[in-house]
Image 1 (tube, rainbow, N blue to C red):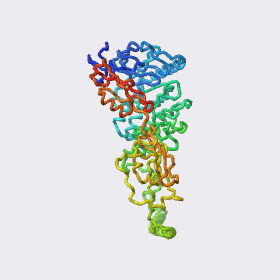
Image 2 (cartoon, rainbow, N blue to C red):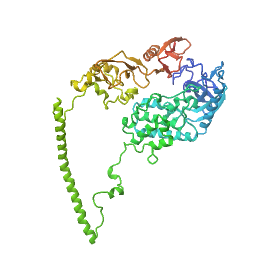
Image 3 (cartoon, rainbow, N blue to C red):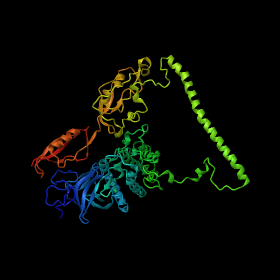
Image 4 (spheres, rainbow, N blue to C red):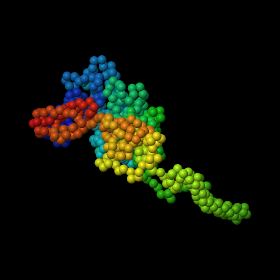
Length: 605
């Protein structure tokens, strides 16, 4: 009946072996732990390709044979507790795992039943039904046409104004508020679990049971670095509405700054996040403060509810983004409150009657005003004179002492500071991030192939050297390693040993993360210093192989550092030399540390 439907996009591909819409071929290798394509669920829903999977189960692209619409089929299949039967469909609990398997299945069914009763919420991926089959349960969900919010932000390529972000995300915040009232905590708010339809409407998806959104449970945790709250990394910390407040605040921060906050595990209370307003001037001060409070590492210090967060960033009287600083009103059109009128220095305007009392008061009022003006004029003349006297007195007292010590006789001459000490100045943008290595992408210095220019002014030995010929250690943390080794100002103070390269999820490759001698510590010139340098993230995404030639795809894998093995396939309809499948799902994370081998299937037809 559905022989011509493509299992990759659920479009009618006719008799073509390779789908002309998405390039999917049913003969391509598949993940054998998942349902085979064209499986029927509930005798109504056709199962297609795998969309995603986590510790709770697998999501498939599906097709409703009655409504003729695309759907998402969510299968409860925790791979740490269950295995697939020999028929490729039945789900069986592993020995000794029957109790947690049943308990988590009960949570899965309860969550989906609750969501199915909330179809009136337009910003929600609705649960359309629940089917029991293969000794497990399948939730049928709405499949929004479009992509994720993360994909939209990647295409956008820049930060949003506060007005744009508020208009887009306020409906999602209202939906979350209603979910909390229904007793549902999402725990997975992120740019990857929110979908943006072709009409520009956002829909909240990616729901999961509590066990999959916390570490150290019987299920493999699915957490979202930068969006998951600190309590989700603990097995004992309670979750609540404040957990979703953290995720929504991180999402707001990402949209208006163009960068995701660092992962909660590596954030430090001593190193605060840069306020959004410092990175984006369209963010109102109160909104910037509310976002930071929503990202507090301590749950008790965090905004406690979505209702409160929405009120803090939106305001009940102004609506979403109503106080955006990009909108201003002419000052002349704004009414002046009566309280301001009452304190003006001029007498209030009113009709003057020929009464003796009024006539006696008017001359005294005018006279008082003249006296005040005379006093103000005298102060304007006297204050500059007094200021000059103070300046020359200060110069006479301290300037003579400076001349006696060999200093400059000009009180306005500032002695030159040592170049090495300038890295610890409060104006250095690396000071706020250096010791933790948590650098926002926007603040990373641009790499330059040219060595840094040496200062044109000679170093003042008396001002740079400390007692016994010591000099203050420079701050290397946060600097580009290549730039440091080319800068003579750094090399005069210390000698860098061979660096140790380590992975970092928050700092770009080449950034110095640690130094053995703390900044500003008195050291002898040229003292040896050990450093640790970032070699980038430990994880990379496995790239898409669709319509890719073997040579090009393998070159990309080598560039990413992914180990691979090639296996020829003769049963593929693709021409020879094209990649037709992988042993791991494209888009999934590859651990560069474990160095597992990715099998690349190539057509030799």
